[in-house]
Length: 179
Image (tube, rainbow, N blue to C red; front, side, top):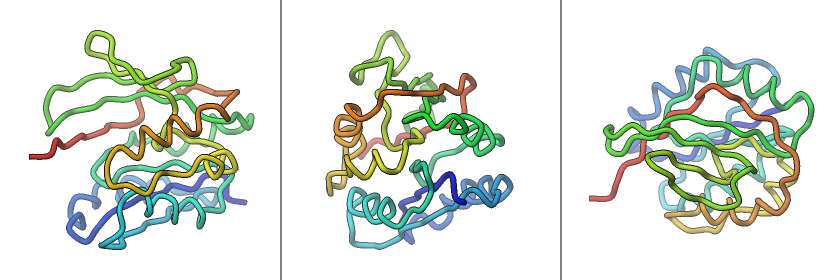
């Protein structure tokens, strides 16, 4: 039985960038986890995320961006968190912009909207939060190339009632500003 589907959108231009993520995932994979990758060159990220979401067979889905990094115990911590079948998993980690300005972020149903306080980002559950697949399918992603994560977060939030939190940072979001 597949408990967790990890969804990754990428392109051939990111073949080198994605390697560290795939190496980290390969070290952590267990039979209860599937990894699905969509590298269609011409489709926007929202369309890719929806296609992966429909293909996924896990009880929970989570999207990992191809240029981001996960902790060495990411999979085991997520699997432990979903044992009680919550609607979603609250996670936290770090974000850098163009490899600089490292900041903390938290994702949880405790936050009713996206905001920043001091140097910390607070977000409602979104694509990088493990969410029950059936709830993610109700929300779906807008088929756009940018900010699909925020719109998905707004769409899925009303369905999320229960949560288990992972306290330690498990995800490094490496934001790249458009130049």
